[in-house]
Length: 215
Image 1 (cartoon, rainbow, N blue to C red):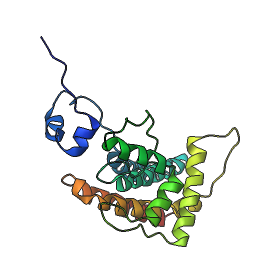
Image 2 (image 1 turned 90 degrees about the horizontal axis):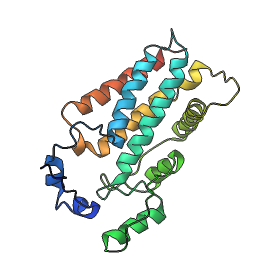
Image 3 (image 1 turned 180 degrees about the vertical axis):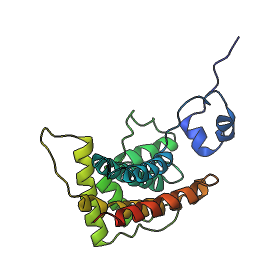
Image 4 (image 1 turned 135 degrees about the vertical axis):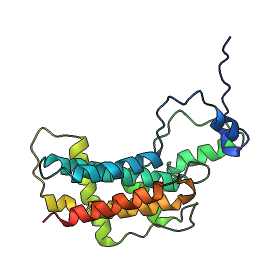
């Protein structure tokens, strides 16, 4: 008779007591793993692929913007998470998790992270646990990210009107997001698998080169 595999509690996993056992279980081998880090790398690659096709399909440029923004948002979440995995949450939810680790009641079933502007502000204002450093973003880069956020919202939340966006408006934002995504992923460089860092760096370089061709 097949037995249901035992599952470790969040506290046990974070404490490391049951981590090896959880990782060794092959019962989840057919599942799709979704993590901020994997999403960041996937969307960097997708941004590059969309840019390669935009001249024949202009709407691909808007999709590239969405992918670049999601890549950086995912990388911010990954970099801010820290060893306990709670650094991208609101202050209130982080406090609840810290209390939970100290034997308090578990937090409510809500785990939404901060929105992009607040994730960015936290990374710029507070040293991140993995690196002990803040994210350096210039005034012009901040403006570019605001423009990229605007485009992503128009792609993910369509209005009933048409929106005409100059290609250059999008192109000047993508290299900024791509480069910062690489910097954020490097904060957790110990989590890279073989070849991943080189693939990320290659995608960032390609995005910059492709955007430089858009005039």
